[in-house]
Length: 80
Image (tube, rainbow, N blue to C red; front, top):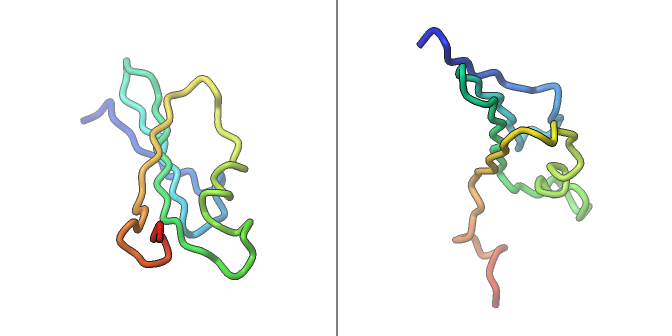
């Protein structure tokens, strides 16, 4: 479609486990999609991808969809 664009916003996320996309289709409202893979990047608990996502500055007035592979099947995520 000539009125549909998807742009990767690699300047917003410096984490390899986060992709932020800006989806624009006129005349609809611009939508931001943040796709994350909650991979731990070392022993620092502040390095979890979800923590990094909280520090990214996005426009407040735009719809935001957060998606990802939450790895609920992995033993690290066990509730036991």
